[in-house]
Amino acid sequence: MNPSRRNFLRRAGVLAGLGWLGRPVAAREEPPEKERQNTDRDREIFRSKMSLAVEQQLQGKPIGDIIMSLGLSFLGTPYVAHTLEEPGEEHLVVNLRGLDCTTFMENSLVLARCIKKGRTSFDDFRRELTFVRYRDGKIAGYPSRLHYFTDWVHNNVRKGVIKDMTLELGGVAATAPVDFMSTHPESYVQLSDPETVRAIRSIEESMKKQGYAVVPKEQVKGILGLLRNGDIVGTATTITGMDVSHTGIAVQSKSTIRFLHAPLSGGSVCLAEGSLGEYLAAHKSMTGIVVARPLEPAGT
Image (cartoon, rainbow, N blue to C red):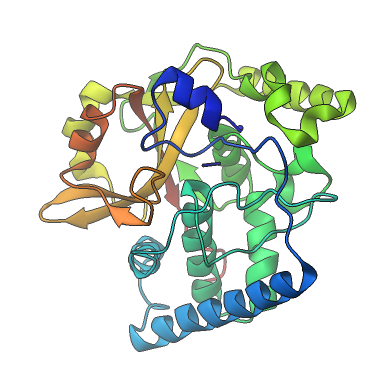
């Protein structure tokens, strides 16, 4: 789960299947030796993805198909909450061993961009991940991380990483304010600092001005044929103060579009049963979708 809200969601009765905004009350701590072991394992997994790209000749395929292939290669990878929350100053966290819905989507996208660009070193991956995860590609403290999905979409549209397809697919303007983080600072260890809370509130005010759209749940069945492999899908939510509660990847399977994701309820990366429309229908707290289409990297 990726703002921290596990206890909040338990009280709201909507914990199963959610994941975009979730932060722990306390940051994780790991011994230095364990961190080194994890980094080595991440490098091994990264190399395995690059080998997969060679075996399947992925570089010449559309980026959406590459994202789909990489996403499917993560099937069975365990769900691990709060993977981005580590002690100390904000820094890039790489974890390919355990994924939440955010890091599953981001890692699949970033690996695909590296493959398309022919930049296949682990350092290339780290640079690309920084570019996608942080506002304007720069780490400048906790607020520089793109915490809200629609803010992530807006900033990555500006960076030429994705195209927001939601309006084209029949989306309507959302009207509810997005302010979960600033109104629940006690849920975030990093928001114990009033100055950081003010910075987050300023970001939320900017988001209000820029706005976002959502394809209503009841319309999703009718637009499934317009979705493509690798489209990034965020599920809008009824939770007060939040825009999106969960994310995943659209995959063409069994003549329909299905939802590939890292759900808390399933414990690992999986392909949801039935169509994306059926998945949404099964979750009352999900009100629709936001769709971002990955763009071919410049020069490829």
